[in-house]
Image 1: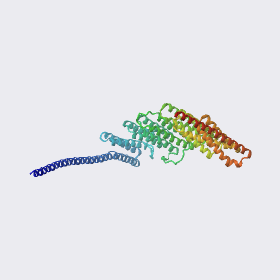
Image 2: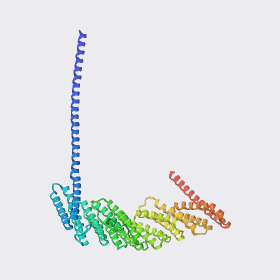
Image 3: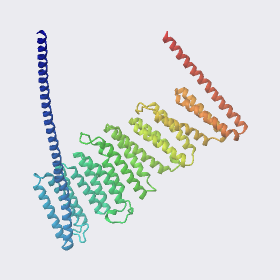
Image 4: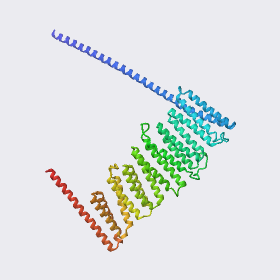
Length: 557
């Protein structure tokens, strides 16, 4: 009986456990189904949102294409259509009627654009630009590209073209549109080239430069400034080569016609950019980019003008450029906080001065003045605290030295001038390296290496053959003495290198060619200097090691 009760209890407990397990599984299944349903709902919702975004993106793209792209295309097509209509009427009727039709069409486009200004602003903007271009073209045809001019006076038509361009620039300022302003400056440049006369072309290029600068100062429109800067110099080059766009034969104009005066005017106007205060309306890189572009463009055009007209009298041109840029660099040093601006104009000044020196003294005599000029540049760099000037001067100095050694006849004064310049420059750089913010000795090492080779080269050409070894040995002794006095290790290494070169030269060249008496003196003197230097510096090294060991012993005790 007891056994049956136990079996019955066990069976009941098993049933209860099974029922509990079934209840738990049902709860889990309910939770899982709920989560799956929620996740499915979220996935469906996200898919629907993505589909909506795709549809929105497609609609935005379609809207942009319709509103902006078709507005561009339609405005251009309308402009060409009216232009062809004018040409047709001019060929079959007369110029006055054709011009009246053109002005009427321009007025109609203006009116349509004005009426759409609220509902379709971009289309209105494009129609406004097209109307201004059409107005300029109709005015242009009053005299230019017409078999019978409607107005036979060129000056009057050019004035009307400028008035039409001025209206466009005024509209650009009212709308705050840099694109419209850039087109206005381009129209001034087009008027300059179409005028086909030096007395109109070059002054109008100055007007275009001033207009572009005004737009930059007032509205910080730097894109049009960079574009205008390049185009002004391109237009001057086109004038220099006879304005081939007006179907003239390609070739340099016959006379300079004071074009340098206008060229200096462009350069001066665009050089005012560093004086414009930065108010966060344009990137800081605009200063550097505009200065470099102006310098390169101005230099290229000046070289073309000099090659065309002043091959025998260009000293005054580059002397004037050097003086102006030097004074302007001083002005910028005290006027602005940007180191690059003043340093660039200083470098530009010294490059122009180098060309003037070359034209004044010719080669090889110019090398003497140019090498000494390098000292002036380093002094200027110290005053300006400019590493840029030092680096540029180093590149020019080494390049000038290589050109001299490769292509010019050797002059003793020039050889020693290069050596003296390298020595003084290395000393100045080492003396005031903190003022030049130089973190490495690379530039100073360049001048020391130059000093090492130029001294050997200068002595080789200056002294008689039998005294070359002796002179080089004296140079090595001078390095040793200087290293002791100034406590500079690099001059000691230069002395050792000079002794090695001297020994090689003595055994390879002098041993067979030198007379016995000179040979004895050379060998003994070189041996005396070499052994004496070896003994002295060995003794000094031992003293240093002994002192260091004593200090270590004291510290350990």
